[in-house]
Image: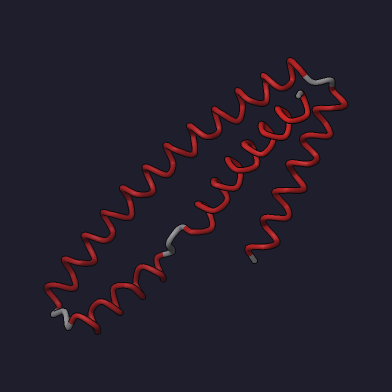
Length: 115
C-alpha cells in the first residue's frame, strides 16, 4: 500500500515538474510572434493599420498569458514543496534520496524525448 501511494505521489510530482518544463519550452519568442504576424498579414491581406493593431493585440495577449503561466508556476512550486515536506516526514532519508533520484531520471528522460 505504501509503495502504491509513493508511486502515485512521485508520478504527480513528475507531472507537475513536466508541466513547468513544457510551459518553459513552449513560450513564444519574439521571432515566433513576428512570424505569426507576417503570416496573418499575408494570408488575411492586412493593411499597415490593421497589422499594427493586430501586433499590439497579440503582444498584449502574450503578456497576459505569460502572467497567468507565471502565477500557475508559483502555485505548482508551492504544491511541490508541500508534497516534498510531507514525504520527508514519512520516508527515511535513504527512501527520499531514491525518490528524488527517480524524479530526476524521469525529468531527464522527458527532456531528452522533447529534443
